[in-house]
Length: 192
View 1: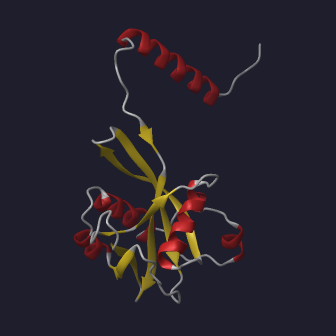
View 2: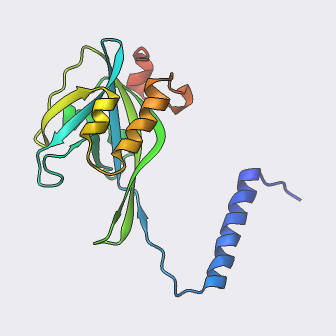
């Protein structure tokens, strides 16, 4: 008899559990779909020995005048982290960052379209000498302390993301296993 791994057994259990659950509750129930079609990125830069957070003021019709961190769509064929790097470059002109997966997610329920939107949050460390060049999507930017950023953001949930990022990426050395290894990041020095 062939042995199957722990992960395989867990997956088989979950699939059989879900099938059994559907039989027990019937097919009349509806599941709200979960869509992951975008990413979010929080950029950090060490200024005067303290990590600051980059917030951008939206200039387009969607979320006009709202201060938030970087976000955008995943394009066809992209991995989520590739979208994060592309969005950072498009929205800020910054390209030399060290990127980490954060294990945190932006999420919001859309009552009009009846789905839950989930976006993985990435953390990017920016070298001190880089300058932000905004595109048309934003009218202003600010490098803020975490406490200032928490006061500035207005989207529900952004405050929780920022507190998590501060705890796990600004106050502590980020875990190396969360670092996104790109060709560019392998050839540059670590930011932290």
